[in-house]
View 1 (cartoon, each protein chain N blue to C red):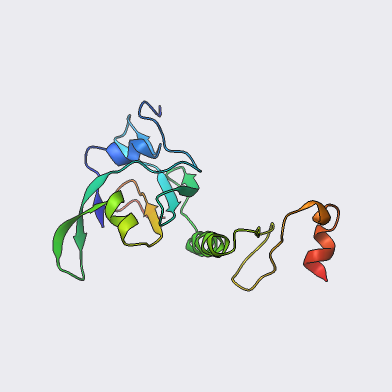
View 2 (cartoon, each protein chain N blue to C red; view 1 turned 45 degrees about the horizontal axis):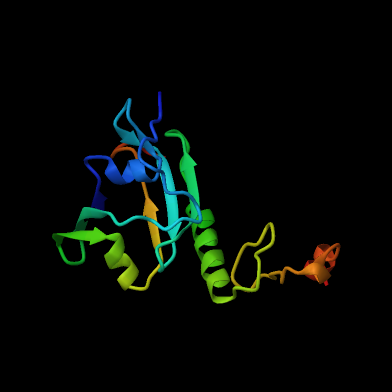
Length: 99
Length: 58
């Protein structure tokens, strides 16, 4: 568990609320190279879904290892079909995912 | 409420600038520090999970 008493890191990530001094419910996924790849910020009263967070971590890990692929909408889990974007995919996404 | 983004907010796709935070690690049962540089040298993915305060549920 980490402490951000000055709010410096919260401000860096855009979750600092300077009226209340609190941080919004933000989750950020950073790759081993230090690039921010994903962000989710909820207002105080909405809890996050950890399954969804894990889904996004898994997807990003998979894509980092397979840079020619994309995770399509509704991708849920490792092993689900991915797409290889390119001109030959135009108009064929449904077919590629459902064949 | 107002949100001030005076500091350059790091945006998706950008490298995260180095930062350092005090930490408590239950496994080591002690205080320590974590920095972005340290996390990068570990070669692992990082999830930063912000929450407003203890006892705010959800």
